[in-house]
Length: 115
Length: 114
Image (cartoon, rainbow over all chains, first blue to last red; front, side, top):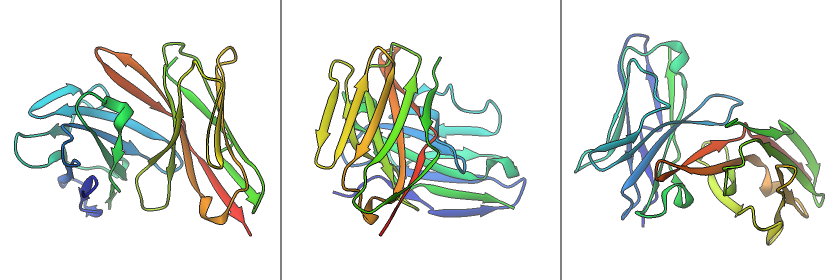
């Protein structure tokens, strides 16, 4: 049973480009959560999604950031017109129905570098 | 009110020693307190967790001590080993709007030296 798969592991983008981060949850998990981790800081919640629904996006910046979790395929975190301050590690976690955050399994993250 | 304050930021312990990491919170609505272990290049992994109706939980060399009145909890790693070298995050969960919201501490980088 593969864990939470995130790709790419490393992503380098020039300022102004778009970044697309993918997260495939564990088999049987229908809830996906995205977090951002800056150096020397903890994880900051960004968005919580279930299949085809955004449940809580209170941690997402209002501009340039969007997330989706389609019926088929991975969850996508999209950052448009990236800036240097977007450089961070982005982690997704998934959990099975009914467990919510009690059942988090994290992926290994995507490290985004904006140059 | 949603913060979880974690200390120390970094910790160096000799092999065989006890590592102690502390966290404090303000919001009494938190009802679940997990600790996560993160190795470089990896995502956090759940290590051990406690509910506020219990004052201590032990799993192997790892123990959580919980002080509800002081709103503090701590992770103790007994007989620390070099393989324990990692970053440790405390967290606190509360239920709001029908689902759990998680607040993480800022992390403690533990180095266990031989």
